[in-house]
Length: 173
Image 1 (tube, rainbow, N blue to C red):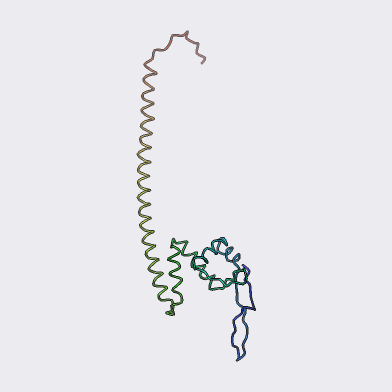
Image 2: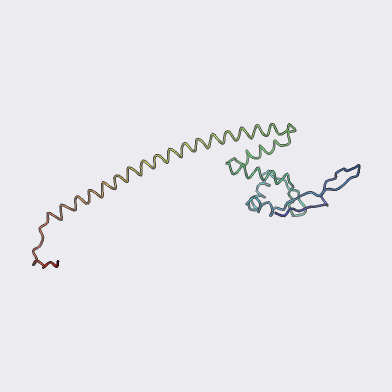
Protein backbone atom coordinates (compact mmCIF):
# COMPACT_ATOMS: atom_id res chain seq x y z
CA UNK A 1 0.00 0.00 0.00
CA UNK A 2 1.32 3.40 -0.90
CA UNK A 3 1.28 5.76 2.07
CA UNK A 4 0.87 9.44 1.46
CA UNK A 5 3.15 11.96 3.11
CA UNK A 6 1.59 15.35 3.66
CA UNK A 7 4.07 18.02 4.63
CA UNK A 8 1.29 20.61 4.77
CA UNK A 9 -0.39 18.78 7.64
CA UNK A 10 2.84 17.91 9.39
CA UNK A 11 3.52 18.13 13.08
CA UNK A 12 6.12 20.47 14.50
CA UNK A 13 9.12 18.98 16.27
CA UNK A 14 11.96 20.68 18.10
CA UNK A 15 15.50 19.77 17.17
CA UNK A 16 18.38 21.72 18.65
CA UNK A 17 15.97 24.46 19.62
CA UNK A 18 14.65 24.94 16.09
CA UNK A 19 11.20 23.94 14.95
CA UNK A 20 11.27 21.29 12.23
CA UNK A 21 8.32 19.91 10.30
CA UNK A 22 7.96 16.15 10.17
CA UNK A 23 5.72 14.65 7.51
CA UNK A 24 2.63 12.80 8.72
CA UNK A 25 1.69 9.50 7.15
CA UNK A 26 -1.92 9.42 6.01
CA UNK A 27 -4.09 6.94 4.16
CA UNK A 28 -6.97 7.29 1.76
CA UNK A 29 -10.18 5.34 2.24
CA UNK A 30 -9.34 3.28 -0.84
CA UNK A 31 -5.91 2.34 0.54
CA UNK A 32 -7.41 1.18 3.85
CA UNK A 33 -10.19 -0.70 2.08
CA UNK A 34 -7.66 -2.59 -0.05
CA UNK A 35 -5.35 -3.31 2.89
CA UNK A 36 -8.10 -4.69 5.13
CA UNK A 37 -10.17 -6.36 2.43
CA UNK A 38 -13.14 -4.12 3.12
CA UNK A 39 -15.37 -1.98 0.97
CA UNK A 40 -15.18 1.78 1.23
CA UNK A 41 -18.84 1.60 2.20
CA UNK A 42 -17.95 -0.55 5.25
CA UNK A 43 -15.33 1.98 6.33
CA UNK A 44 -17.85 4.83 5.96
CA UNK A 45 -20.32 2.74 8.00
CA UNK A 46 -17.76 2.46 10.81
CA UNK A 47 -17.31 6.21 10.60
CA UNK A 48 -21.10 6.73 10.83
CA UNK A 49 -21.15 4.54 13.96
CA UNK A 50 -18.46 6.71 15.56
CA UNK A 51 -15.73 4.07 15.43
CA UNK A 52 -13.51 6.11 13.10
CA UNK A 53 -13.06 9.85 12.86
CA UNK A 54 -10.96 10.68 9.82
CA UNK A 55 -9.85 14.18 9.03
CA UNK A 56 -11.86 15.82 6.27
CA UNK A 57 -10.23 17.80 3.49
CA UNK A 58 -13.09 19.01 1.40
CA UNK A 59 -14.94 15.86 0.34
CA UNK A 60 -11.93 13.61 0.93
CA UNK A 61 -11.41 11.57 4.07
CA UNK A 62 -7.84 11.52 5.34
CA UNK A 63 -6.99 8.69 7.72
CA UNK A 64 -4.08 8.87 10.14
CA UNK A 65 -2.14 6.01 11.78
CA UNK A 66 -4.53 6.16 14.76
CA UNK A 67 -7.49 5.56 12.41
CA UNK A 68 -5.62 2.66 10.82
CA UNK A 69 -4.90 1.14 14.24
CA UNK A 70 -8.57 1.51 15.22
CA UNK A 71 -9.61 -0.13 11.96
CA UNK A 72 -7.27 -3.03 12.73
CA UNK A 73 -9.03 -3.49 16.08
CA UNK A 74 -12.47 -3.18 14.49
CA UNK A 75 -11.70 -5.88 11.93
CA UNK A 76 -10.18 -8.18 14.57
CA UNK A 77 -13.18 -7.64 16.83
CA UNK A 78 -15.62 -8.43 14.03
CA UNK A 79 -13.59 -11.53 13.09
CA UNK A 80 -14.04 -12.98 16.58
CA UNK A 81 -17.73 -12.11 16.73
CA UNK A 82 -17.82 -8.98 18.87
CA UNK A 83 -20.70 -6.60 18.27
CA UNK A 84 -19.90 -3.11 17.02
CA UNK A 85 -21.20 -1.68 20.30
CA UNK A 86 -18.68 -3.81 22.21
CA UNK A 87 -15.87 -2.76 19.90
CA UNK A 88 -16.87 0.88 20.27
CA UNK A 89 -16.87 0.56 24.06
CA UNK A 90 -13.36 -0.90 24.04
CA UNK A 91 -12.07 1.76 21.64
CA UNK A 92 -13.64 4.57 23.66
CA UNK A 93 -11.53 3.59 26.68
CA UNK A 94 -8.24 4.29 24.92
CA UNK A 95 -7.95 7.86 26.16
CA UNK A 96 -8.46 7.11 29.89
CA UNK A 97 -4.87 8.17 30.69
CA UNK A 98 -4.28 5.02 32.74
CA UNK A 99 -1.89 3.30 30.34
CA UNK A 100 -4.83 1.48 28.73
CA UNK A 101 -5.43 -0.55 31.91
CA UNK A 102 -9.19 0.06 31.87
CA UNK A 103 -9.38 -0.63 28.14
CA UNK A 104 -7.44 -3.88 28.58
CA UNK A 105 -9.58 -5.03 31.51
CA UNK A 106 -12.80 -4.40 29.60
CA UNK A 107 -11.40 -6.10 26.51
CA UNK A 108 -10.31 -9.18 28.49
CA UNK A 109 -13.77 -9.41 30.09
CA UNK A 110 -15.48 -9.22 26.69
CA UNK A 111 -13.05 -11.73 25.18
CA UNK A 112 -13.62 -14.20 28.04
CA UNK A 113 -17.39 -13.88 27.60
CA UNK A 114 -17.03 -14.49 23.87
CA UNK A 115 -14.85 -17.54 24.52
CA UNK A 116 -17.52 -18.94 26.86
CA UNK A 117 -20.20 -18.28 24.27
CA UNK A 118 -18.18 -19.98 21.53
CA UNK A 119 -17.53 -22.99 23.77
CA UNK A 120 -21.26 -23.30 24.42
CA UNK A 121 -21.93 -23.08 20.68
CA UNK A 122 -19.29 -25.73 20.05
CA UNK A 123 -20.97 -28.04 22.60
CA UNK A 124 -24.31 -27.51 20.88
CA UNK A 125 -22.76 -28.15 17.46
CA UNK A 126 -21.05 -31.33 18.74
CA UNK A 127 -24.41 -32.56 20.06
CA UNK A 128 -26.09 -31.81 16.72
CA UNK A 129 -23.32 -33.66 14.85
CA UNK A 130 -23.66 -36.72 17.13
CA UNK A 131 -27.45 -36.71 16.71
CA UNK A 132 -27.15 -36.47 12.94
CA UNK A 133 -24.52 -39.22 12.79
CA UNK A 134 -26.74 -41.53 14.89
CA UNK A 135 -29.72 -40.72 12.66
CA UNK A 136 -27.70 -41.45 9.52
CA UNK A 137 -26.54 -44.79 10.94
CA UNK A 138 -30.09 -45.76 11.93
CA UNK A 139 -31.56 -44.74 8.57
CA UNK A 140 -28.79 -46.47 6.60
CA UNK A 141 -29.49 -49.69 8.57
CA UNK A 142 -33.19 -49.35 7.71
CA UNK A 143 -32.33 -48.90 4.03
CA UNK A 144 -30.18 -52.05 4.04
CA UNK A 145 -33.01 -53.97 5.74
CA UNK A 146 -35.58 -52.64 3.24
CA UNK A 147 -33.41 -53.67 0.28
CA UNK A 148 -32.88 -57.13 1.81
CA UNK A 149 -36.65 -57.52 2.43
CA UNK A 150 -37.44 -56.59 -1.18
CA UNK A 151 -34.94 -59.10 -2.50
CA UNK A 152 -36.29 -61.89 -0.27
CA UNK A 153 -39.89 -61.09 -1.29
CA UNK A 154 -39.00 -61.03 -4.98
CA UNK A 155 -37.00 -64.27 -4.98
CA UNK A 156 -39.75 -66.68 -3.73
CA UNK A 157 -42.36 -65.27 -6.12
CA UNK A 158 -40.17 -65.91 -9.11
CA UNK A 159 -39.53 -69.48 -8.01
CA UNK A 160 -43.15 -70.13 -7.07
CA UNK A 161 -44.55 -69.18 -10.49
CA UNK A 162 -44.72 -72.09 -12.89
CA UNK A 163 -42.80 -71.48 -16.02
CA UNK A 164 -44.70 -71.47 -19.29
CA UNK A 165 -43.96 -74.47 -21.35
CA UNK A 166 -41.84 -73.75 -24.30
CA UNK A 167 -39.97 -75.94 -26.62
CA UNK A 168 -36.66 -76.54 -25.05
CA UNK A 169 -33.91 -74.76 -26.82
CA UNK A 170 -30.76 -76.55 -27.65
CA UNK A 171 -27.97 -75.44 -25.50
CA UNK A 172 -24.84 -74.34 -27.17
CA UNK A 173 -21.94 -75.49 -25.13
